[in-house]
Length: 274
Image (cartoon, rainbow, N blue to C red; front, side, top):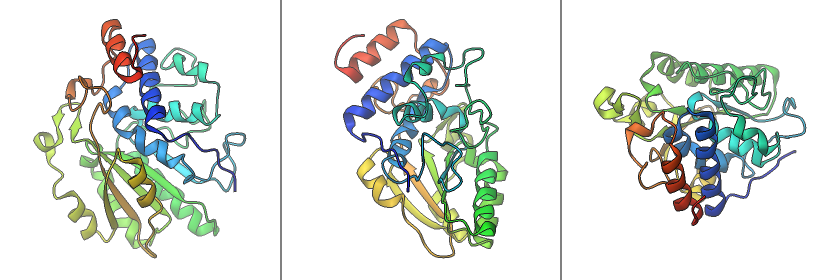
């Protein structure tokens, strides 16, 4: 088995959040709020849970990770660079013309990403298809998919909610980044998802809830499997997690920090002004 693990510490998480902000600042656009809320989930997946090989991104027996909430890809890029998929100096080319680091994943330019996502809802259908293919092929790789809570309002999500249990896809784990905010406001105001856990249970999924920023807790629940059932992990998170003036603020869904905001945030994350 091939794996390359990330240093999954609070210090590394702060460093990666600082890097993500600098990437978005350099690109003059992006989504810091949702990138910060899913970072701890992605870090933990790369802490010995995912079977993968940075030297061979298309290795046939790798576990698959689909980032259905494609706008959160700065978090994925930061982690991929950390574990050696590409040079770290590429990170500051985010969203620039010709860069392989597009604002949403581009699997042609960046083979380390499994699917081009961002049309919300579609990534989960892709993940289900990959999980079904593994069953048909007799392959033992596992498929993980990170979805957003605003994305969960898409009908395509609920088609998978119905069909994945029908096909007994116990090789599929979905993680909801439940930060309770989307571009138009709070999810409860736009279209409430509650009771979210009960809904997935009603569709016959194995459902687990966890603090999405507690990486030790995430590491315990992410490998959860129940024979014959797909797993839904509801990760309760905070939009903009890690920077005090961003946390829980919907306006940080999709805007780049200006020079002063970047300096203030990096000072908070790094302990010094940069």
